[in-house]
Length: 405
Image 1: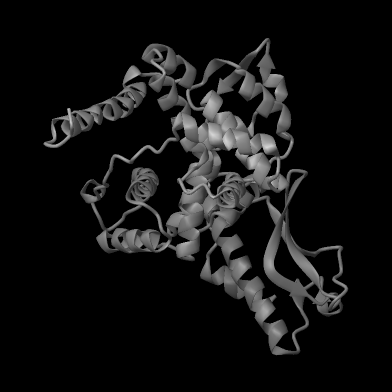
Image 2 (image 1 turned 180 degrees about the vertical axis):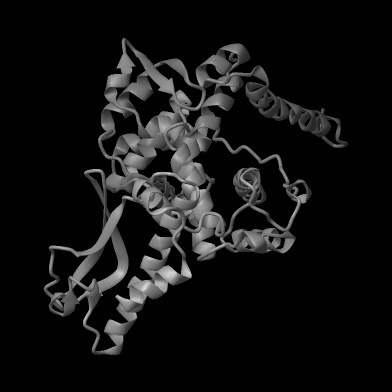
């Protein structure tokens, strides 16, 4: 009881007794988990909160309790060894956090429900730690973002967490971005990838600024670079070579399946997420009919004979990560002695460039690729046009002295 009084003295109670009864009816207690570990007989500890007949349970990480030492009335261990004392200290810190949250709502004269408490507790340091703040914002936007966009922000946050355990807002300055850039380069990230990551970070820092959180840098001074990347593609003969190897069916199953996905993209122009979500149900009367998540438009692609054969040979129920499929695709290329760099997006580029190499119509290509703007598709016209420019070197050979003509 003395321990609890000391905590309450540190965080004084606000408002009248009647107001406190109205504003802070939420109750809490620590509760042992039912499962006992066989290795040491310890159990996990949960924080159990209730309000108006509704309850929430929050697992307390990194805390294991010997149930025989637990004092339910005092809500602490009967401390005898240093390990028990450390656990009690952690519980003291948790209870201090709880009282801070309750007093915050008392000051605002707001009702603290169990649901609100869980959010406040889990994201207690959102105004201090940028990692917590971004985590809160990304999860709140999850239902409103496209799946690919959410995964992108999620992965940027994951990379930040791998880099630092916490990022205090006051420590975010020009050195922060320089150090982050150096970290990304150590991972092998290219300039465009790093720039996209920084733009995502800036987006959530701007959200923090709108909420009154201060940082020690003007975000307008943080510039990002955009380098026009080289679009790799395969020639018609190279696709034919890989198709012949696919038909032989001599590769390990995972490499064979990955090569099939790549070739299917070469013949259809589908993006990776469209490949990953594909099933034979998307084939209707010799057409592929899908809904594009990126552009939010339907897409209708004629199904060629080769694409149809490949579609029948692929196990579309096998769903694994992009990184794994890419690993298996590189394994297939290695086993086949195919030295050209390939990825699933190279398959999409290959479809587009080979379409234009065979005198395809750029407007029809725009429709097949699902582009919203003709300027996006026009890049493939320029790429194949550059190949035609090489013809001038043949003329140079004809004009050379001693050519015999």
